[in-house]
Each structure stands twice: as C-alpha cells, then as structure tokens.
Length: 191
Image (tube, rainbow, N blue to C red; front, top):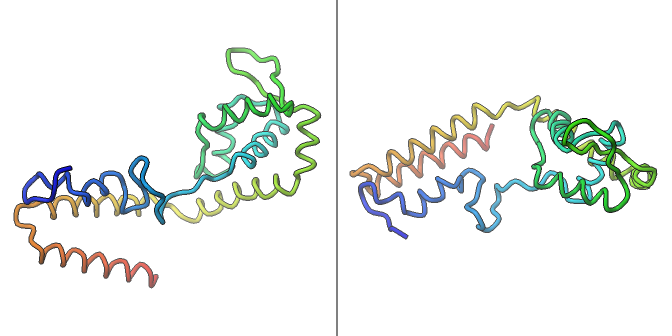
C-alpha cells in the first residue's frame, strides 16, 4: 500500500481508499467488517420465501416479474437480486410449495401448490409482517427523496479528495476540514 504524500500519490492512503469504496458514507470495501452504516438485508431467507410464495399465490409469475413486483410494492426502494430470488424459487419447488406451470417462452412460470397455500396459512402472521415491511418502506420512500443528499455527499467527497490531494494541504488544512465536517454533522443532528 502506498502511504500519504503530498501530490497525487496520496490516493493509496487509507482515507482515499475508504472514500473510493464509500467507507465514510455507509459502504465498505469488499470483505471488510460490517460498519455502522452498512445496509442490512431487507428479508432473511425464510421471509423472502414467504413473500415470493405470497406473490405467486396472487398469480403465477416469472422470477423477473417477482423482482419487479417487490420493487413496485416497496415504492422502488428495494429489489431483490436475481442471485437471491432464483435459488429461493428453486427451493420452493424442491419443498413442493410451488410448481412450474405451462408458459410461452423460455421463462419458467411459477404457481403455488396446495401445500404452498397451507404453508402461507400456517405462517400468516409472518407473511403479514414481511408484506407490511414492503409497504412501510414504500411509505418512507414517498416521504423522502434522497437524491439531493446523495448529490451533496458526492460533491463533498469530490471536494475532500480535491482539496486534501493538493500540494499545499497542510496539517492545519486537515484540521480545518475536520472542524467544518464536525460542525456540519452537529447541525444535521440538531435538525
């Protein structure tokens, strides 16, 4: 790893590496430890299974349709990845809770079985909680549009990288930047 120097070499510095990976804004480098700002999964595997089963109970669907329906129900705030949805659909088939139905084209159309309906009935409270989570995130998404905040954070990241990478960035400059950031954080907390 390169160390902090004046000039352009500082991009190897841990500060800039963290900035590139979003470390100061809730992300983490691949394989890094979980941080305070890291997003958790929306559903655990059992909950996602119930949500998918509930949606195919309403009508037979393809995997892609299920992803889009969950995204719609969450107000665009969440869409499960195909890497999670398709293995879960395979598990539902293996468990006998769903079945492939005749469909046109290469996509598999999934429908619910009688065992799947019974499974949903037995876990009605869990299904209700999982579906309520989707509608709650949709309501939150309607109330908040984070685009201006994301834009401002990007501007801050760029300004920090530009200013701290300049030849004349002294210890005093670093301390002044830290003071400004602490002041902004305090103002945000008091909102």
